Image (tube, rainbow, N blue to C red; front, side):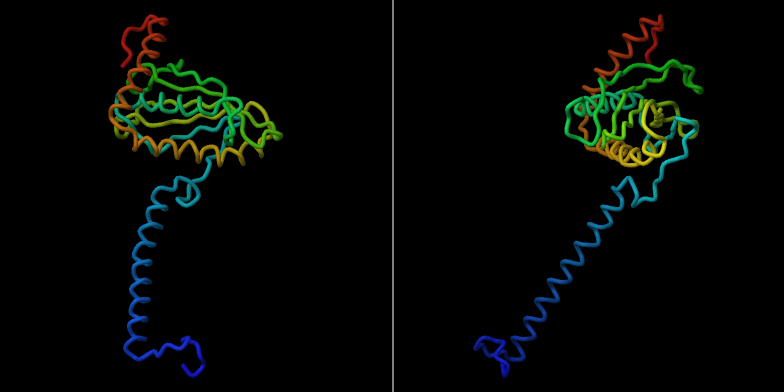
Length: 217
């Protein structure tokens, strides 16, 4: 009041205490919402925050298993989920990469545990900045996990062009997006999952019939 900071208002001890109490409550509410938000970000973050790093490639091939497992139906549905994802990143897209038309089908090798064909999705991707000339072939397949008996997501990247150094550096961000899309699968409803399973299974059956194999499971 002596300095004129109150604008003519008389601040009593009671009113001043009320203001301080209000500020303390506001600070407590903010702190109580900030911690859960930060925790949720750390849980959901699939990249640097969780300490994830690229494995070392063997030559021009980079292979890795991701911590995502699926049951019998979802192992096909997740491939159609990624098929749509890569179609949305076709040539001319404004995203961080663009792809040719993905190929959803079955691999040449049999599952080591079940002896059956392994479903897979293959796509060629070009990574930004395009002046570095980095392109690669990505294969997503789902072999059987020997520990759990479930189907585990497995990625194989083969460098087609660009320097090895640029390829590794750009793949850090590319694979972060792939991992994040796996996390988005949790939000897909049951009806949509069944639709994607049916679409993927029809393609599997077509390819198996061409090879003279009747069992698509």
